[in-house]
Image (cartoon, rainbow, N blue to C red; front, side, top):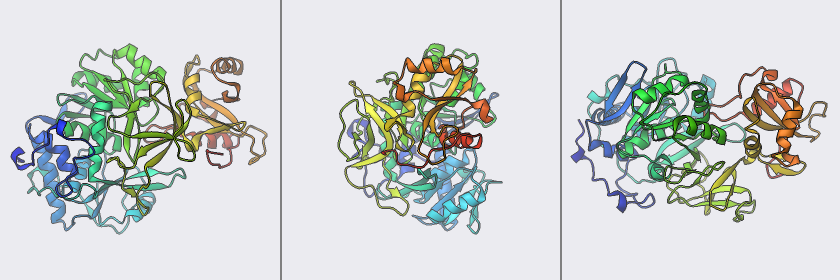
Length: 527
């Protein structure tokens, strides 16, 4: 069993900033995450919840398992710096192997278990892993050495923490570029320091909290917000078992005294469709992965008496803009820069724009949470790393998300944010959800350049006249949709979304093309 005395002393919070606690010779991400818990070995670190009970892991068992897995991986012949592909399902094996690999100085490569054999083979070829640790029935690349996680890692001989420069490679995640090709994102051990501003600047996280995340173990949002952040402060992480339906999460929140709930808009939306029990222990909720509609936040506030705090981020940096219990985001905004972050809004020439003007969101390249690089590419250079998001700031300094640069619509030569239009149309009577995208109208010659804004919606049928009048009262004429398309006409009951809950606008456009509409030609958002 790990002994708290065996761990190096944790610096006092007031003596540490996210920028300077990077001992170049003695740092390990996994050890940093588990250090606070080592001081309370009997406290529950993780509970996997079902409607009938919970499976619990103390901090002592968690730390012993991580160090046991580290020793096992080294005994299997892997060496410091080797890359280890993770192909694990929605079980505790995933975070244990993830942290165990880093504890040993290995580099875990996180991937979705839903990927097919050809997909994971192409992705693995980018990063050249030395082995794969895999669960039963999950596709793996051909020809790669396969390991199966041991059933009781807490009983294995523990490895010592592998210390080294905080800037060395720690883990790899994949993100899709604008072309849809997965990109391998390399992060350093120091990335965990880049999460410190989230504890107060978004999560309002305390040692006594019990944070329930609705996602699967093998999702990066769950891994960061649902597990590593609570463990870093010595709190308790709660994860819903796979057999818990989204509509049952409210009952789980109440039964297991969750104080913070982290999820995505689609889950909040499903919870609000039914009756909610009283949640006396819940202090607030967290949202990321997709823009939070103001109406959804308002409905949650009314029904639960608690707020939802949204964060904006990306795989290359994690979150950096957010509302928080100490500073809630103004309605319609995504909040403020987290404490210690340096954020800019830049024009196409890389110069700051005035408040109220839309520009490219950028984060300082010296942020410890920023990636080392994309695999095979140079490290981010210059003062700023642009995220691909478009934002504007208001007089209070809050940031308003305008969408991805590659999703901006061009109405009559003027750029229009899908997010702005969707917020304005959110109260359209009878509509349960909607999204806008640019399409070529029926009858237009494909590739002619003729484009209109279309609104795709679920819910009750709405007449064009009613919808047009509603839009005209809230939006400039050039921002108003010219087509109103019920999802049912495309064979859908709800908006298509990716694994993180983001609306797949390109899928909507493709379905229009299949049913008689035409998709717009490829173009850069700045045109």
